[in-house]
Every structure is written in C-alpha cells, then in structure tokens.
Amino acid sequence: MNAEQNGGIIVTGASRGIGASTAILAAARGWSVLVNYRKDQSSAEAVRDQIVRAGGQAICYRADVSQESDVVGMFETAVQELGPVRGLVNNAGTLETQCRLEDMDAGRLSRVFAVNVTGSFLCAREAVKAMSTRRGGSGGSIVNVSSAAARLGSANEYIDYAASKGAIDTMTRGLANEVAAEGIRVNAVRPGFINTEIHAQGGEPDRLERIRPTIPLGRAGEAEEVAHAILWLLSDESSYC
Image: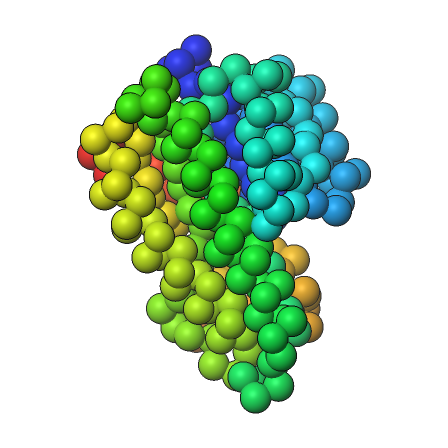
C-alpha cells in the first residue's frame, strides 16, 4: 500500500515493547495510528508524540481489550478520528508470575485468557465489521501477535500464557479462511525471545540472559525486528499471505 492508501490502523497494547515499535513504524509507513493502552497513559502519549514529531498522525485511546464496550468505543473513535480502519495489530497481552500449573488458580486463568484470547477475538470482530467488503468496507489486514510459547509450552513458567497464544494461532488460521474472500488478510507473527518488559512482569527480569546460550543467534530479538515483520504482513508486499 502507498501512504495515501493505508488508512487507519489500531495497534493494541502500543504503549511499550512490540506494540510501541509497531505503532511508530506503521506511522512512518503512512498509516494513521490509534495507540491503544490500558494503564500507562504517559508511555502511550510518548509514543503518540514521537509519531507526531516525525510528521505522522496518531491518537491515544484507553481501552481494556477484554471489555466489549471498550473495544467497540475504540473502533468508533478510530473511524471518527482517523478515517476507515484498514489495519489491526492484536498485540495486547499479559502474563503473570512464573509458576507451575498446580499453583495456578481460576482467577489467574481468567485474567490471562480474558486479555490474550477474548480481547483478540473482540478486536478482530470489530475489525472484520469495519473492513469486510461484504459489509461495505474496502478490505484490510489483521496481524495477531502470538508467541513461540505456543509451540514450546513454557513448562514450569507459564503454560497458561502459552495455551492462550495457542488459541491465537488457531483463531488466526480459522479467521483467515473465513474472511479471505471479503478482502481481509489475517496473519500472525510468533516471536521468539524478545527484549521487552514482559519478562520482568513474569517475575524474572534477567530471563533473557539465562536463556541466551540456547538461542542460535546468541542474543534476544528486539521489538523493532518484530515490528518490521508485522508491517510486512500489513503491506501489499505480502498480498498472497
């Protein structure tokens, strides 16, 4: 897509990490960006301000993606402020402190699956409504952020998070088939070990240093590297994916 063709894009969980890098790169590629956040308003505003200083268009929007009304309101605001929504990056995700299954309770499982699974489904639903040619839209692209954990399982750390990302893999495949004929491409990236704050959230800030010897490249990936893969999937360069 050329810059004038991109339209609006919603990047969930865009106040930090992969989401922030994706929002900034998307704006540089001509997208008008809604920077979604749930709690960290100052970081989200910093991402927005960086985009605007570089000549791009961006707004911030507070929404808990696990809450249906928040998601609906976010998409309505995106259309009002940015124009037709033609892109969605389902990046918002959460995990909790590392532990084994026998120490997990129902509350933890509900929290993780509410954001990682229900949130992604709700955002994708609204994106389909906005983009589908069957509903009068002009098409678009959805990119879901999965994780290598879906394949590895994250034993003794967070198998609940891994399972939630497995659900994203399945949803991606099913939705891609469901809406391909309606002008919407649905893909996912499955990052490996990436240098973001999520490891500290899991209770082990130095986790990447522990894992580093097992990584063939000998280092963790950076959020910007994942963002480039996401932007490729959003672009016409991946038009047959």
